[in-house]
Image (cartoon, rainbow, N blue to C red; front, side, top):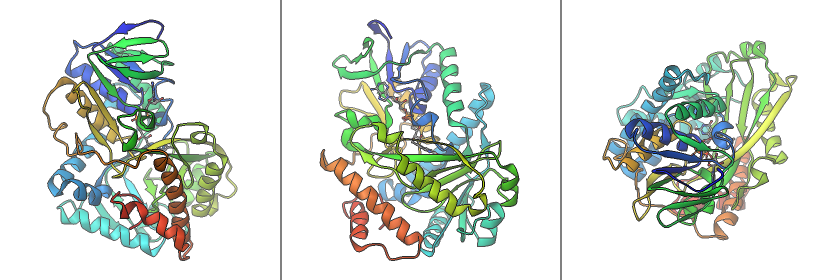
Length: 439
Ligand SMILES: Cc1cc2nc3c(=O)[nH]c(=O)nc-3n(C[C@H](O)[C@H](O)[C@H](O)COP(=O)(O)OP(=O)(O)OC[C@H]3O[C@@H](n4cnc5c(N)ncnc54)[C@H](O)[C@@H]3O)c2cc1C
């Protein structure tokens, strides 16, 4: 952007949340001028660099029920199931080749505690009359989908599709441009002023409504900062080895995670690679280099990969990257409108925003349009905010707790008793009423 401008709706952030909001709003209210402001390029943040898991919320049912009760929780899960289908339909209808493949999501337990957690998840889904959404897998069934010496029993969730996230983000960008949306890339929003006006690095945008779709960067926005903590997540990518995928029988395209609190997530690609994420990562108050350039976190992700797939020891790791995730106190996102009524937000995806951002986009479009819909009645819309402590406690606490959780997870994985201090610290968030970390 090179000069001051006016628009009806200014959307700050050109990731999935901002772009889906623009997409849905441009259909709902074609008469509105919509302007997306992105500091990088659209999809340059986590939306273009994530693991590509478009997954459901049946595994989050316990938290959803604790927060909102059974009926709203199940309604939210069903809405997210529809979003996964919606992403596939969007790609098909708009010629976006984002390698969308709906092949399901497997949990692979790697120790007895995780097996127990898996059983509880499956039982909970059955108890709300959704037994087909999440079902138990025997050890043989797990190995038949993906053979690893680390895996024991598991569970299978129908709601899981893989996407190539950068292709989806860039496809969405093209599609919203075709709808007449204006996009200014390389344009950083510096602050919001009354009006509302967005002061950017390229001039001021006067708008009637503003949408904050800045994900982990919300730590820099005073009204949202305490609703999240920023942690990093890293992925390593192997060279193509389709013959090795055949050997371990992982040809079905399933998304897979273990059940660590600092979860490891992994998937295949159409050219026969494994993308493997998780493991390490840091917490910090500001989104800086440590979120994209942290060799320790890359090594930890690689160690996890080598542990789970020893038969791939000869296959080189060709690439690695990372990005920030916006951890919310509830492990779930919230969407809503700030006091004053003309600034809307969605945040707190906690590393699981590929499918939920599609839901957020619909809810935000409805909030901007001022319509009461199924989306604005979702329980996370304008839910009472849960807050982390103020700075500097928030980022120091997040960094310490993050390390403790990783240490706790690693000890548990190796069959050792977690260090007593790490154990106390890792369990602190639950004691403080947050839905994070071990019980
Ligand atoms: C390594 C990694 C792996 C992940 N894997 C998965 C996964 O497999 N499945 C899943 O569901 N989720 C995953 N996630 C999380 C997922 O990527 C996010 O939840 C999702 O992309 C959120 O979309 P968003 O549009 O809200 O945020 P973002 O993609 O972060 O978009 C926000 C945008 O706002 C821009 N911005 C910020 N501040 C400003 C400003 N002041 N002015 C202008 N622009 C600004 C940023 O540059 C950014 O492009 C992963 C995240 C990471 C980092």
